[in-house]
Length: 239
Image (cartoon, rainbow, N blue to C red):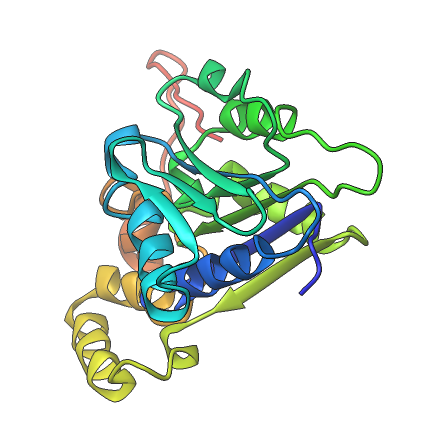
């Protein structure tokens, strides 16, 4: 598979996004050209149970004797090529600076990152002649006003970028029907259940915080009516 400037994967949980990304990265590490990867989470402590675990799971299943694994630093190295995977936590955006030799970055749960985090990592990974650089990002689209919504719309129109949407229906190793029944029950509970279904089952972008939004429970017959203007009283305008 090709390496893109940005390869973005978004959609529902249990869609297999992270497994497919990990497989691609592990397979590419066998190529003779430089392929050094930063696997990143917003919080360093989350790496052991996320990117590091799934990379190790792929290795254990397909290449059990081809990699050196150092659990204390979440470091992985291909024995044949020397290509490596190094962990990076982005509690501070500046943490993205100064990682020598990385030309690929995987931003797992990218919705937890801010745009400064992305920019620091994007300008940290480096390539030389004939060495490709790229970012792979994955996330669940919880908030439509998140910076990822605007950025992913731009990536979708750029020639060397790829944006992929997936849902749990694309994952053939889980019981999709059983999960769908659970999601349908959530949908039927309330208007908030409908919102969750759109995000969790359909992979659509959600609203920021339904508990704080008037629009979610807006009823024209209840919330709109005639009023009388009194110049002696305060007037409030909202936009």
